[in-house]
Image (cartoon, rainbow, N blue to C red; front, side):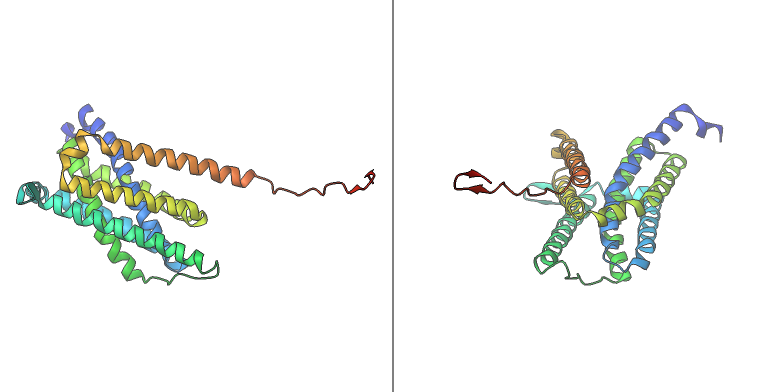
Length: 257
C-alpha cells in the first residue's frame, strides 16, 4: 500500500486529474447543449446522468484495458492507410459530432429566422441520454488511452477520473446556464465541437499527422482565443449604454433660430 503514495504516483495523479478535467470540458459542453433542449426540470438530471455515464464508461474501459490495447492493432487497410478499432471509433464519433453540431447550429438559425417566438421542438430525456452515451464512448476512449499513457496504475487512474467527475458535476450547471443565457456563446460552443469532431476524424484517419503537426495545440489555441474575444464582447455589451440621438438645432433661412 505504501508503494501507492510515492512521489511519482502523486505527480501522475495530479497531472492526470488536470488532463481529465480538460478533456472532460468538451463532454460537459456537449451535454449542456443537449440538456438545454429538455424542459427546465429535467436539465440538471440529464447533466448529472450524462457525466455519471461518462465516469462509468471510463472506469469500465480502464478495467478492460487489455481489450482497449487490442483496439490499436490494425484491422484492415483503406486507401493505403491501416485502420484499427480505435481509429474507426474516432472516425465515426468525429463524424457524429460534426453532423450533430451542424444540425444544432442550423436548428438555432432556423428558430431565429422564423422569429424569436419560435420554439425548437423539445427533446425527450431518453433521446438526449442515448446521444450522450454515444459520444461518451468516443471521449472516454481518448481519455482512457491518455490515462494509460501517463500511468498504468489503476489506483492512480480511477481516483483521477472520479475527482475530475466531481469537478465536472460541480460546474456543469453553471456552464449549462451560461451557454443558455448567451446565444452567441452557444453557437461558439457548437463551432468548437465541430472543430473537435474534425480533429477526431483526422486522428482516426492518421493519428501521426495530428501529433506531427501539433494540430491539437493549434485547435485549442484557436478555441481559447475565440472564447476570450467572446467574453470581452459579452462584457462590452453589458456595459455599453444605448446611443441616444440628439436633435440637431434648427437652422432658419437667416441663420440659427
